[in-house]
Image (cartoon, rainbow, N blue to C red; front, side, top):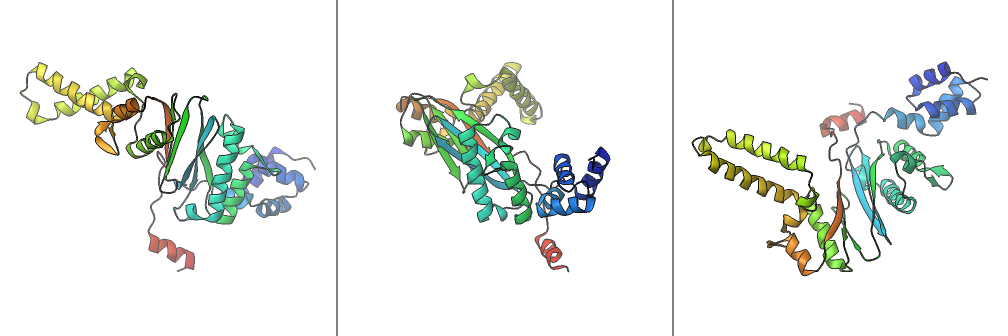
Length: 296
């Protein structure tokens, strides 16, 4: 039987499964709609698809490194509780290792990776179906270094935050880890002012000027004094954004730049992932949720 667009559309509407999954189901079932629905249910695809519109902003991050390559990933779930599930933990660890080894360029390439005859995407579909929550690979990033450099990695609270740094011309694992912990705890945006785009500096200057204009205590200050105040506040704000200008978390009397200088090294780059950053989070009443589960 010919698989028409109308059949695929009807199956999508009835199951919420993806177009390609619907087409495959109809092909496998020779165009029989009811059998195709059963096929999707048996594969867990229909159940997973119904959860696709739900918010998944919890979960964990991972950072792994081997040789001259490191990888950070974020896998999301709907609740923090599920992120402690053994199947979820196995999935995120397997995913991190696969991506580290294969170094895909895009999320689509990552999800298409082969794992024992199945795609990585199918493993996420299976997890969504069996765990009962939407489980998604949100993002990943690959870092590279030379033989003369060293990675520093750190995971906070079991993976709620992960960080990775590259130290130039160094083999000091202790300093490398300290830098990763600094990035995780202090959340810098740039290595230094030299890495900061001019438009970011200008935007922050405008923000500080507006704050000053709304400060009544500065209303009668001379223009030259006001400009000095703006530049002083701007400098402090930019320092907080730059890793090397931050106070060192182990000794606030030192700047990170001083620690790096003493170790005769520099931070080449860093990446920091925090679970759910930038995502909408679901807020629910726990008592109401329990009542729903027991049918009250």
